[in-house]
Length: 317
Image 1 (cartoon, one colour):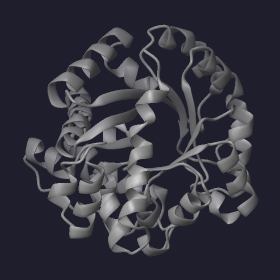
Image 2 (cartoon, one colour):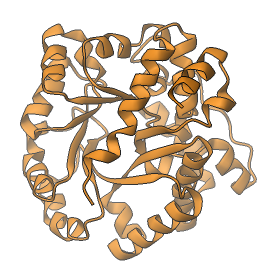
Image 3 (tube, one colour):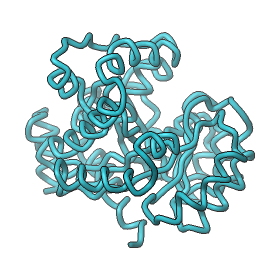
């Protein structure tokens, strides 16, 4: 299987790459499917995203105008969740972490309904996929309000990890310490979006303040050899999303993406889609993009794939 992945990369065969077991451990649930899946369901021709977005606001506007408009209400929201599981099966994603906000739990009628729907989707659309649900908080949220709901949500023993997303500069990362200490009490794996738009120092601060196990994005760490060594020594995993970085203009192209530098610094890294409905690159395409850009070898990318497949081993049933 390992050698087949390398062979298919060298052949540049997207179809064969899709047959190999992979992970996607940084994906927002409502944005985890493919555009053509939603297009077919909605019977609509959806405009392809631009090669690059001008800003996060531009990205959000495109998403609202071209995806959400065809997915209104509860039915549309559920269809986007369904699309994420369907895509996992199609691309042989055997380890899948999808993130959900607490507001999405309320939207479907509470935790019992939320769990039932997702377990059914997992079984129906991606029965061979290990599903790792992640609870995510908006960086701009009212942390005290979110903390007040946490015991009830986590008492169901459904979520496997916790995350902070959206605007990295909305408020200091330390404001989430109480939430993350509570999550740690429930044995959740601790993650946060940081170092996508911020600095290497921001990455190190977040890991230290919240005792993170993993960082979503974190590519700013490449700015500091000291911080990269520190992350490597502490075995902090970075879940990197190459197409997201390129299309948001954080990185000029796949050919100069810092994942190579980070990988060679000894930091465990994974390759992920982030928002597939927006960036429109599957996990297989993400690997192929890096390989065809001559950034990393097939052997290196296979080792990255293996790191991602280990994700499920971090969680105890």
